[in-house]
Image (cartoon, rainbow, N blue to C red):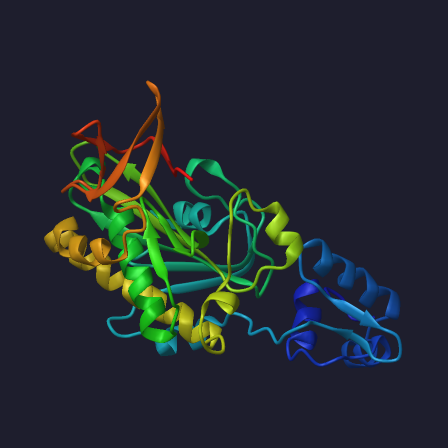
Length: 323
């Protein structure tokens, strides 16, 4: 029997979306049917909807393009910076933190799946292999963390521009401070984590999670209304490795621009996509719930809310749209 056979090996055999019998899989891989079944169960446990049909075998409901570091690197614009692709990580953010001391600036880390992926406020981010894009980029700044207060907003603009320049997504908007939404449903999220001195320098890790496909089971696990690119885009899904490279390019370009010009370079882009502008909002903060109307962002990236005729700014509080 072949040693070291894994769920990843099996997924490669099923990636085309065509049905393959257990006997054929066992013959190709030099393993037993029982070993095939064990790894089918492992893929299902990770959230992949592997189907089994009598007389046909195993198949996925759609083709899966696995991440490939060489393909992503080849599609990136110069100058080059390292790209690391992993089958499974606790999270791309945590991996980037582990290698940050020796990693070149703008290094990118991607994972097919994460065991401890998270978003803002520590919310879990679920994405089985092949069904999303989870990536993180590293950027060093000479300034301290306070100067990066608008970075999440800027990176949201970059991610939205990357997606809309590659595929049509009717109704794509940005929900302050870090979500890409379509019709109020979350398509992607940005997570910024910063380490360093108060006055600088500091190192920022910019995480991006994008739903490519969501099964009904995943929808039930998500703690808020969500959508996926397969549903949101007006055409077929783009090549996954090219899309990853396109997103990385836009994030890297945006990070260099943010370093030079700050949030002001992205303010107009955010204003065009702002899903909260003019909306009735509820702010959940230390003073309890307050009601107002969204009025854009200020120069720091704080949300501006009109409450009883005056403008207040919100940075860390939870904000929801009143229905």
